[in-house]
Length: 112
Image (cartoon, rainbow, N blue to C red; front, side, top):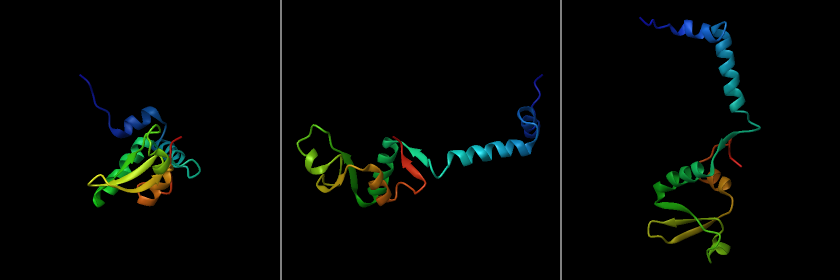
């Protein structure tokens, strides 16, 4: 018959004391949220975040293809309204667009 261990016994199995267990995970969390490095956000995730923020205004961010004739006018990203009219050229910096819209907090940055 299999016996279940209490959480305290599980902690002791991996680390000597519960304090060491907490210290390990606290240090790990502090390392992941290092202000110099910042939390990494992928381009796709940031793009989706921006579109969720803009959806309240019936606006969507689109990515312009490099071989498009309008790429020189619009840049990499542009915004369209619900009728597919171009609202504004977004530019080339997705991270700046994300900060302007509020989809990217100050401790996060776009992954390279």
